[in-house]
Length: 355
Image (cartoon, rainbow, N blue to C red; front, top):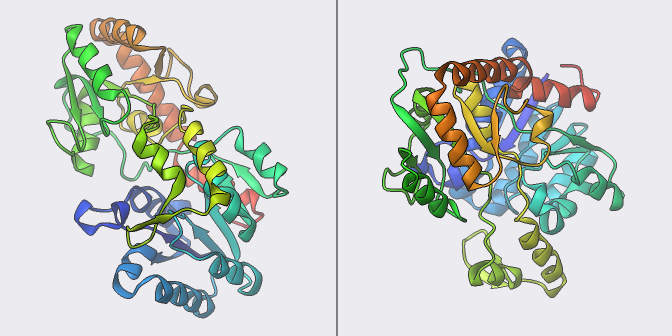
């Protein structure tokens, strides 16, 4: 099948930050899906936009679709880089099936997804509540999917040895620094990586090794949803593609307020699958329908609040055999059911496209 993948190549569009999450997980998994027998064409809209500007990038996308005639246009939108009229033209005139993976419907549905969805033949969501929201706006072709693991990249490190007690990889936003201090104050040796932590940011390769070499990998699901003056300002201000700000249309203020409020919801992230996929033991906060994907206490371990986190970290640091059994079971469940290749095969079947 000829598939045109339209997504960001670099992390937040910045080549200095390395490849994006989407590149590592979506583009690479599409290439590997079904033993690599699909023809995957890549349209890295951030790279092209940085070279020629937004308008010309959109024109080039239309040209590529016209010339290459893909069966499926697989989008992973970021903000407003791809114009609605561009998507509409491809959907209505190219003959290709158009699809978008909406990444953050838990909090972006009201001020982003619901406006873009009608331009696509199909969309997917990772939010258990979102399908009902789509139906309320009259959109029916929504597929409930979920994050997963790119098992081509995220896999156990062959020569890994357990060298860390407890680790966390991620940014120190929300209450994460407070949680880290409480863990350390309890006498548990914790090391953290990411922009804003003393250890700094870990590369992709370093992160995968950390997952494999940690006795306990923490996943703190609370997002960057602290309601402060900066977040409130975003209700009224609009960030443009050139990173300048303008006053948001008053018609969007209510939608932006809903989005800010919904940031408080705990959502599953890729880390829930990447850590078990690397053979790591996962100690995670609970999140929306996480129990549909792993068995608590047998494949991963879920904590409820910081005191429970500390208690369970102490327990599993002492009980190595039990911890190892859970890590193995989590790994086996991941490679059996929770890879992006399997997710994308399910999406193709839902869109009635032969994989």
